[in-house]
Image (cartoon, rainbow, N blue to C red; front, side, top):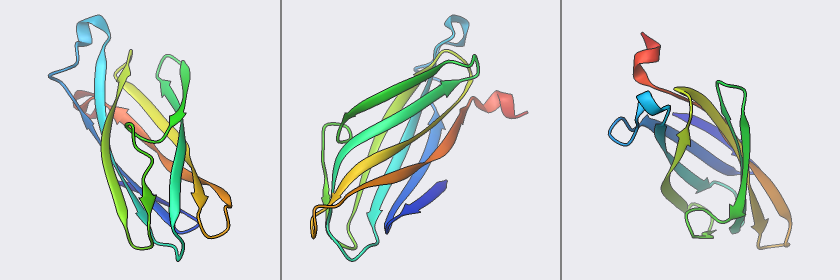
Length: 128
């Protein structure tokens, strides 16, 4: 589990390899990541957009931008959290992701970039 806090917004990530959906013979590796966004600040925040940098061990990097997370743009009051699960396909058995959420602080309209901690995706047999 990895955690990062930016301006009172805490992001926690847990990664899991999905062997059932992967096909190593065809260089297809599937990972899921479970993210919890917790508003530890004193202000309501609204998640507007996400940006991901996804790298594999071949040196290829993809950049993914979009509105919200899995079709939602949660509004989080102080003390509230939002959790979601998404996935990533890689062509290699090792990769990494990192990114940011663009959020708006409702109190004053200030836009903030909340850091998503960099996490590694690695098939379990590579750890031996």
